Image (cartoon, helix red, strand yellow):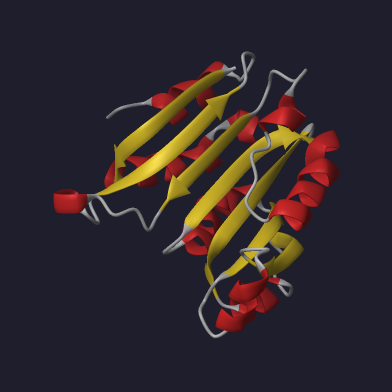
Length: 179
């Protein structure tokens, strides 16, 4: 397992995300592709996703499980876990769901979907690495689209990338490129 994290140019990460649907391995029928929106959207946003034929909404709810945050329900702080059905549009959905918040993109073996769903329901924001032990063909990408980059605010995001040891080369090259 390999990890990369830090600031990344906003244009670079967006071009990486837009390149993903063109990679054959992203369409693996042995893997699921999940988007974990970690807040920043309204309840209505996720309700509208229920009618999409390109996504399956697995769960939505308040982005924190701290009781007092429910008092702030007027703030767009809804989180959600969606499964991408039309992977040709994964880039559009990931950027839309992640707008103004943190967002995870999980390319994981199909058998892990239920475990990820349970972790999201229980903890809201999660570290799914413990579920990936024993698996080698996966990646997780989390981007903070609302990152305060100081003088470069708006030009950079913060990202965390975890790559399985047997992730196909083209996926790894795309996800780790620096230009």
